[in-house]
Length: 297
Ligand code: GDP
Image (tube, rainbow, N blue to C red; front, side, top):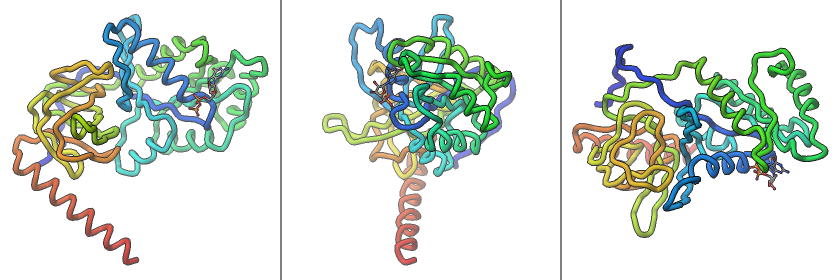
């Protein structure tokens, strides 16, 4: 069966924080994610394979790591939460300094708060002549969100996702926030985690991006993910480089599942292939029955 076994404290090792970027449309979520990715993931890669796999990890100069869910907007966040997946440790809320605190910004803030996920504000577009970061911070204060410059405890940094100004400092603040959370996981057991996205690739079959949250996933492991299962045939990191194993807080894409699981589905490594297949089949049946029932009502 799928067990959620308790880890002994000595088995727990520090892991990278997992960060989601949220905010109002056009405030710069994609630009920030692209800037961070290009500055940290692609630079120095000889192959230069640039494929979006829905999540990536960055390593800062001091060796500290951050894992970003590369699906901007809170749709992915809410979809995952709706499936019971708590993936995000920290929410970066992007707000354009030449605009106001918009409805979607407020929505993103309340989603994060409802999930008890700490916020870090990225006050963006400060390169624009009409940018007024103080007005944004005042607006936040009026919502009872006091950022550091305003005497509060919430981390915030002024950035330009276009020029890259302040982005490094923003990431440092994310890591500071992460330190307070004392994030840990046990790398020495069968892997489990969450599906980020999955699709059918013409040449390669089903490609699933998954986030390992505990344990270590290895080639040859038998994985159960939502209503699908299969043996891991190949694993790739965010650079498209083939890897053989992946520990906690590592996003990877894998080949070998017999279908595309949904974003937010949990995955587990199963010792017993037959049992995994049975559970997957059972889950599909339950889902079918559920959808028949909802159609009737
Ligand atoms: P998203 O909808 O939140 O993902 O926003 P985008 O990242 O797509 O950005 C919306 C627009 O704002 C694009 O035209 C970007 O080029 C522009 N933009 C984003 N960040 C900045 C910034 O820091 N400075 C300036 N001048 N433009 C930016």
